[in-house]
Amino acid sequence: RRVEREVVRPMLDGMRDAGHPYQGILYVGLMIDDGAPSVVEFNCRFGDPEAQVLLPLLQTDAVDLFEAIALGHLADLELAIRDGAAACVVLASEGYPGSYEKGREITGLEAASSTGALVFHAGVARDESGNAVTNGGRVLGVTGLGETLELALETAYAAADAIDFEGKTLRRDIGQKGMQHLAS
Image (cartoon, rainbow, N blue to C red; front, side):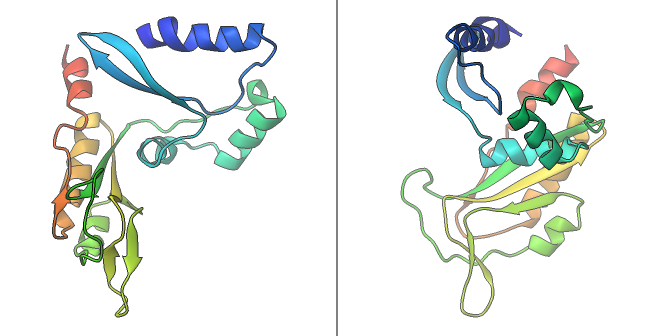
């Protein structure tokens, strides 16, 4: 709410007052230091992890949503969001965002999918034998859905742990601030 009040609303009001009202997706990349937000970037699109965690909860057809935004009819659209929660864990190559090795075989994709998680390929290619191999820094986005954030995280991490490739790195703190907020 503070970010909306201190960052987003003044920016949107300023654009509107300048005759350029904003319509579309707005991603605000933030750093939070001692509770104070600082803007790192504004982006007019979702990044992969942001889309991979939000869009699976969208029940309204995304094409209808984007068309309503583009044509200025968003107020006429009934937006339906599925109950529950989602959590996305990115599996990255060791060394990312710096230099990293490509061509490392990825195993466990079928096992990960059997957990009920959604596995989004990003930095993935096929080798000459048809095996999935790493081909980028952010290799996979693993999204878990659940009735609660805790269940969504359990699903995401179970799927992430089923996948393996040499140099696989991931954050183990995804969703923990949300869990702490829900507990308070």
